Image (cartoon, rainbow over all chains, first blue to last red; front, side, top):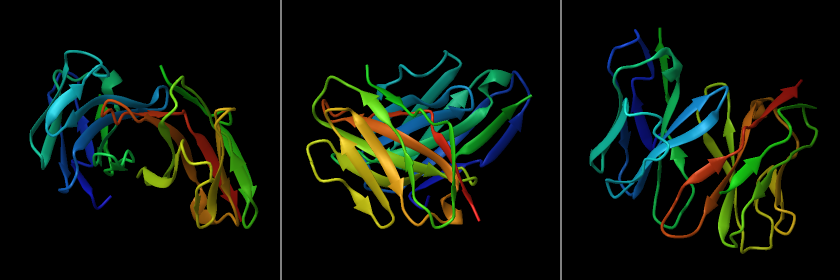
Length: 113
Length: 116
């Protein structure tokens, strides 16, 4: 996981609160992905960026979810307001053009009570 | 749409033995990549092996090898000389090679337990 840093590693919040998850990739990538993992639904792609531009956000479940990538070294996934059903592990992953394999961060475990 | 199916929710194997995890996929495209990822209890997603669809030779990485059957749309993972550290969830994944899209589609995973 040395290629991608995610923070926080664990987040516990109350329903209705705003949650911001952070991802800091190393340089050399062109693509950045946000995934959500739950027992029921497995790994789901939420959104991905190419050169900091959002390409496909069709996996974002609701308007409560938003993601930004202001520069190549930083991305955020925000949930506002959070709900208990948002409890999951959220992964950030990166890849380079033409490599197709993705390298994942350690994930953020989000619990919404 | 592409789909990936892993029909074995759970498997177990004795240490030092060989185990094969199954994966099938569905696509009408001809150019794509296939991957196996490992997720140990630490929940870190680790790339195990990849296979380019245009290559006939099966990929191998140390104790891990694949059996890629393109016509059957099958992509199984063989782990030889299983070790306790191989205990993990294993995910099969598919990626199209077109339009710059790098999206991965994952299967539901197979939970592998290696017993001492």
